[in-house]
Amino acid sequence: MSEPSTSHSSLPFGAPVSGPTTGPVSGLPYGPASGGPAYSPASGGPAFGGPPRATVARGGLFARLGWEALLLILAVVAVAVAAAAAGEFRFDAVAVPAAILGLYATALSLSLRTATPNLAVTAIGALSGMVYAGVLNGDEISSLPLAVALAVGVAAVVGVVLALVVGLLSVPSWAASLATIGGVQAILIAINEGQLERVVGDGILRSGWLAYVLCALVLLGSIGGGLLWAVPGVRRALSANRLVSDPAGFSGGRLVGALVGLVGSSVLGGLAGVLFAARTGAATGFVDYSMLILALGAALLGGVSTYGARGGFAGTALAVIIIVAIQNVMNLENAPRALHLGLAALAALVGFLVGRLLEYLDGPIGPPAATPAAPTPTPAAPTLVHAAPVPFATMPPPSAPPA
Image (cartoon, rainbow, N blue to C red):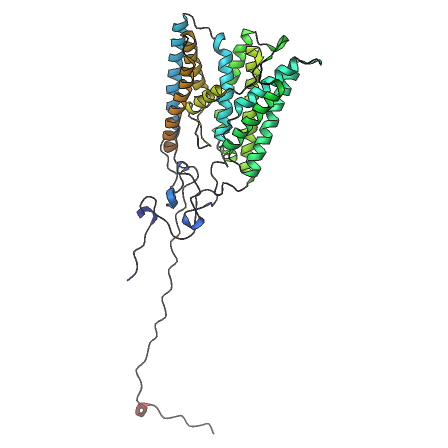
């Protein structure tokens, strides 16, 4: 009696599958036969070596648009509350802070989308701000464009080194960026012993209209980046760090994703540090971890996935507006610093929950799993037919030999 066949659909959740199999993206192996699952459960891969899940449309795009519509409503309400608390809402008072937070949040969003989170963006910003102030205060003839170029160039160099470490050595970016924070802090202490570096001359940002322009450029740039990421070819080319069969292996796609995510986020962080130094009139000699938490909270609240590859369109920009407006109210009410950090932590927590829900609604990444081919039928064994013996008496006589 033949054994009953077992299909993938009849297996319980997490049941092992016998035989070598491949996943739905680039033929990557999965399951016990290859030593472990190739994808994380969030990306739609098999859980505990179970069968692959097909890509299912669950309305993820509409859910993201709905979430951003809700963020837009909350942003309008937050600005209205801030205007009522101040008696007259002065946008110039929050334009540059919104641009600074927007740059940091966009930097983190970019690194999260490429699945190479850069936790050193604020540290790189502090280093760029110090270089910016140092060049302007130097004895040599210098100009404002030169100071900005050198400061951003230093940020780019740090980003390239970080990306090469992550891309070539397959080091997790969170670990490499944390180590970068320590190195940058050491440089800051060596340069100025952790003290402030005053900005003089034209390096201080005083123009109100320029603040509006910078804020508009940052927010529009964040939205433009989200729209660019919606192009399937761009998203596929830069998301290789999300889906990997061997986390310690090397691939050109992962190196490209690391270069774009880490160098791009470092440059944006450097611009934010320059803008902060220009606005406050001094460069800090220490890493601002509170700004890092605020930027991370804004990125996650905007719908950027912690798993990589996915994000919204205008969510990060709207989340920045909400957080800056609430902070403005807190400053008017002389709220303690603990509330500011609590606001960032709350934004990140809500972002975790929303991001996980959006991941489920988006469905797994990659094309549907291929339907296993029907097994080739085994040919039946030949049947031997035995004739009944013929009695000797009935056999015909032998024919006569030829003459």
